[in-house]
Amino acid sequence: MNRVILMGRLARDPEIRYAQNDQTMAIAKYTLAVDRRGRRDGNDGQQTADFISCTAFRQQAEFAEKYLRKGMKIAVTGRIQTGSYTNREGQKVYTTDIIVDEHEFCESKNAGSSGSGGYAPAEDSRPAPDSAAADGFMNIPDGIDEELPWN
Image 1 (tube, rainbow, N blue to C red):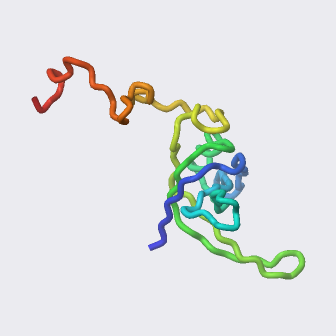
Image 2: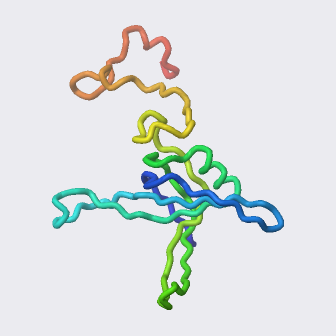
């Protein structure tokens, strides 16, 4: 089975082009910066990331063109595709890309470092962090017991 799920931030805006075959097809290419789990000793404790090439086609490419921008945190599902070509110097170059089946937002529009892209998620119904007590639990208002379904 060839299935991959990644979560990271866009390292740059997607590059969009349109293939002119029998039908016009959108193709989007972007780079996803995915943090590694561990930290390297020789990297001053800084977290490292892998920069992974992603390619989306058709509706997913159009979605990327319309909504995805540098710095946004997204989740990608797809498959790994490897290939090779010979460059101008005659050397064989090997490639690894993710062919995107789906991508989705992982944070609200305002939480990303870019703050753009036209994405307007549903209002978050979770209480604000300042409404939590010192022990980390939310303060429950008096009289809420009547509204609970299991009473």
